[in-house]
Length: 322
Image 1 (cartoon, rainbow, N blue to C red):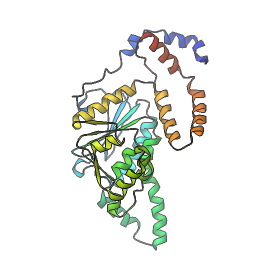
Image 2 (image 1 turned 90 degrees about the vertical axis):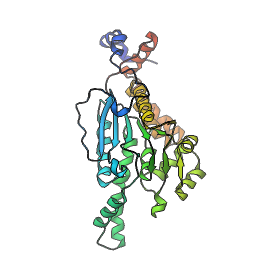
Image 3 (image 1 turned 60 degrees about the horizontal axis):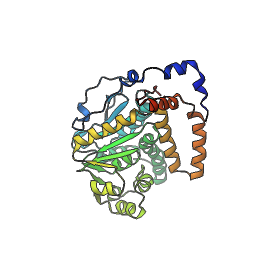
Image 4 (image 1 turned 60 degrees about the vertical axis):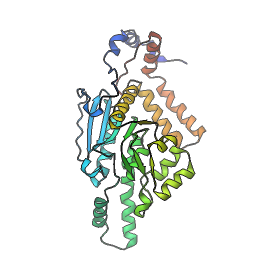
């Protein structure tokens, strides 16, 4: 395999610099006892994120925390939330200072799902006139943007880690099913609630959840009965990958994982996510063809040589922003 960029003198000079000096600027990782929201780290991004229902912070270099911020309402999802999530993750996708995102919920619960009162008010305002067919057309126009609210998590090439504590109901399952990694605390309680509201889940759970757990029978049971399943069952069926004793250790663990990922090549990490999502929805051969086309360009990245040199010198490489 040839890497044409290594012939460039400027690149060789970059690769021959002292890797210890380059690596010293990285965060070292934090003890699990440190709470994510109390981590002290200067903001290295010039971009400002200002939302009504979301609090966006940067606890450490290249790691962003997106926190649902309606704790008094158990982070129930309002019309503003659906809109702001689309904007937030579209902006994070293009933010060069962001390599990993942690999704959390403020207060005593992760999320109670859709805000029923807000949804009913919005529905009545938009559908108070016309016959059923015209209301149906209006709903067909309204639903795709709501679905996009969580699809943007998948479209964002940066890995998104969901850190779930206590309640995660309805729309919360839709949301975290679109995340790359799901972690939870021991008190986590998951409910696919929509059938109890007289509707079929329509913003992602039916499409993503069964593929995640790989058990069609159990997926249908949980969807049809709306019974809750706790952290131990969520871990057993593969819906979450780790369970922590409490919220503090959960958030610290999520940050530790995010820091580890953020130190890897952003070209490699984001390329992996794009191809993992593509492979889920395509055949093996189609996915291999897509990967070949993708890597025809990405194998020429400077990150390949930086990683190789760092491996030989037993040092940690520093990768350029992407």
